[in-house]
Image 1 (cartoon, one colour):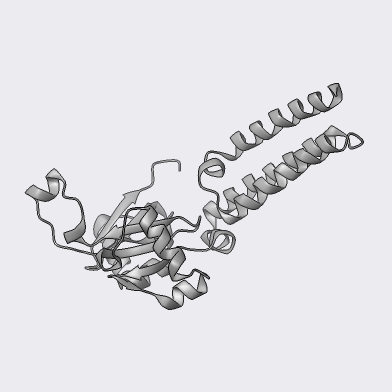
Image 2 (cartoon, one colour; image 1 turned 30 degrees about the horizontal axis):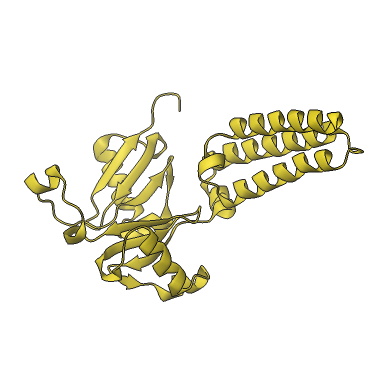
Length: 225
């Protein structure tokens, strides 16, 4: 009994430290790769607790290897967006201007019942009120209502703005985002012209978005990032 208690305490502390090292994303918004790592860590921790013949150090070493692997993949993915897309996928638009994209729904293996249930949970009962619904890479459904269906804020009341659609990411951490560019009809020449006017280089841009009117907005990288 004493051995089991000690093993459980040691592995509990190890798992807590491991999750802290991997960051808050692993706790709140698990991506596919992160979910796999979390499951494997739980298995590595459970084995020595259940089998007293297995050395605790084996479980600890396995957990540390998984944490190091996750940290390395995350670091590489920051510099190579292609790797992030391979491990996590990309967001998928399933409702556009009140119309369900049935092909996208089929590719995601989601039924209409699943979609309607998730919409109702979020408080949306009428598909025709929705401008965009997007399944994020972590499986969460994001919804943007049509302008006339959105709750008015003080700013909206005093400053009526034309509808410009959903902002699309066209540059992400100094790299072109072809999916976002295609969605908003923006090409590399448009971005290069914008950067030239702003006296910026592509690698200096942390984030750039565009709307349906091809209006570009950017956030510059901080020095040393």
